Amino acid sequence: MANLDYANGFTFRRCLGGEAVILEATAGGVALKKGDAVHMEAGVLLLAEHDDTKIYGIMAADAAIDATDAKFYPALPKYVFEVQTYSVTAFVVASHTNFLCDLIGGTGAMELNLGDASEDQFIVWKIADSNPTDIPNVAGANANVYCMVHNSQFIGILGNSAVHV
Image 1 (cartoon, rainbow, N blue to C red):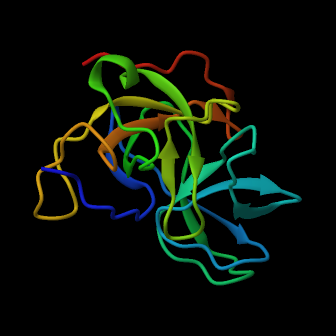
Image 2 (cartoon, rainbow, N blue to C red):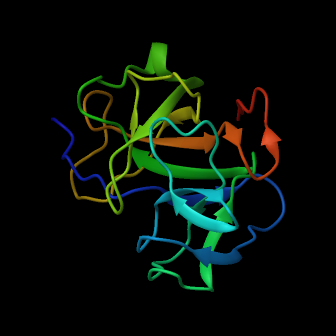
């Protein structure tokens, strides 16, 4: 059975040690949606794009333009997020586990592009156990995966953030 195309950004799933921390910063220039990847520029959070070299965090809630209390998860190596993969490159367990890739999409609809690793923004951990729909999650196009930020603007380059559990 094929996966449903349901791009909805990054969803926080677990913290691999300690408790998750949600921070606040000022949103700049565009409204941000829960699940959007963001970067920091001139002291404000901006929507991350596929060619940004580093990720500052993932939005924990929607934020209006210029909101001073925009809530986000900082890009830390212990935070695991669930996200859909872009349909152009099908997820294959043998080749896409612990795989570096970049994001694609706009606000409210970000995905991981398994066909682009030019910035190594994220690392895919494994296929997700769940799916936000009633359709089972399977390897292939539009698969949901667990991932972590790999190149963090929040704390610098994390190096090999691959996790084996």
